[in-house]
Structures are given as C-alpha cells and as structure tokens.
Image 1: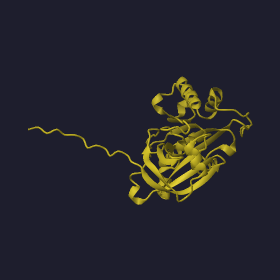
Image 2 (image 1 turned 90 degrees about the vertical axis):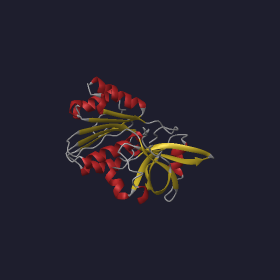
Image 3 (image 1 turned 120 degrees about the horizontal axis):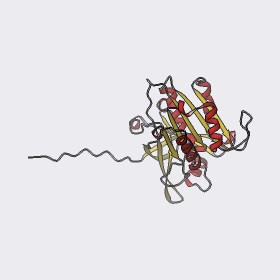
Image 4 (image 1 turned 120 degrees about the vertical axis):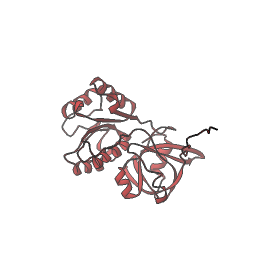
Length: 269
C-alpha cells in the first residue's frame, strides 16, 4: 500500500496588534514610528534588512493598508526590542497623513510580519563594497541594509549616494552623519541636493544620468563594487539601473525597489 505524502503548509502570515513605542519627527513632513515587539512575537517579527511591514487601520470608515520599510539594523532592532518604519507625507495620502498627524506613542496598530525580497545576506567572512543610490523615502530600507552590513561584515565598506531637495527634507540625515562618524574609514555619504548647492560647490541638481556617472567615476568605479542597491522613484531607479547595465555590471548584483507613494499594496516609505 502506498501513502500520499504532502508537505506541511506554511502558516499564512497574519496581522498582530503592536503598540507604538515612540514617534520621532524626522522632517516637517516625515516621521519615524517604532513598534514594541513583545517576547512572544520576536521570532514572528524577525526580519531581513530591506524588508517591509504592512500596516492596517481604519480611516474615515474604510480599511487602509500600506507597506513601509523597516529602517533599523538587525542588531539595533534586537537591542531596542523594536521595529521602526519611516513615513513621509504624500499629498492626499491617507496612511502617510495619519501616521504623521495622528499617531502617538501608546496607540495600537495591526501589523503584518516582515515581507520582501529587496535584501542581500551578510557574510562576516567577506570584504565587500556595497553601494546604494537612494532618494527621498527610498532611504528607509537602505538605512537598514547598509547599517547591518557595517555591523555584520567588519571588513566591508559601504557608500551611499542620497538625493533630496535640501538638507532639511532629508530623512534620517543626522543618523547617517553619525554613521559616517562611527565608521569613518568604511562608510561614505554623498548627499545630492536639487535645490541647494552641493558641499563641494557644485550646483544644485537632481541625480540624473550625467551627475550619477560623474559621482561614480570620481569615487566609486563600478568595477570595484560588489553589491548595488537602488531605491526611490521610478525615474531614479531606472536611470541608475540603465547606467550600471551600460557599465557592464552584472544584473544579479543590482538590487532595486521602486517606491510608489501611498497606494494599496505598494511600499510607501
């Protein structure tokens, strides 16, 4: 007699009510929201850097769900017993406006465990160069990715090219500057502002193909990079992806995520 063997089904992820432990004002239009993770849910909410959380709430009588990237390293999340997301206000955005204007510490929000494939495993035995190109709220998963790399790979380096309108609008900028001070030989931060001149005296401007090629040519030759992370608006991600392809970078080393703002099922950031 034969018996049909089936693989056990994986439990379908479900929402869990989490308590907001703190809300930090990042800019006049962005906040960081942290959730306390109780001991009994630590394994459930284990994550890989670059993944996101999906939040669910009711706004104006309607259920609203949006996904936001985790923006803490694994080690820092474990130390705090928290997970943190960042949200920038989007004009007309239901969830982003609610998070920025109404949410307070002590509130309880339904949260789905971490999902997403915008991630690369760390390897303490390797010495790699990780380079991220991000703009606006695209910094949220990149912050988790690069900080974890610096903590988990002691001989690796990381470079971030970060585009924003001006310093006051840059999410997590003080935290990134502290990271550069903490790892002066291993982390390089290159800010690009579209509305104010750059620190080196070059004119204001967005990260277009010409500016990106100049930035990479002067400090970050693509042949010397092991892993690339592209995150932000579609135009930025496509510009960077095509440039790297033109430079001969193998596509399996180019990891990208386009941020769509405050739309159901999209990573909002």
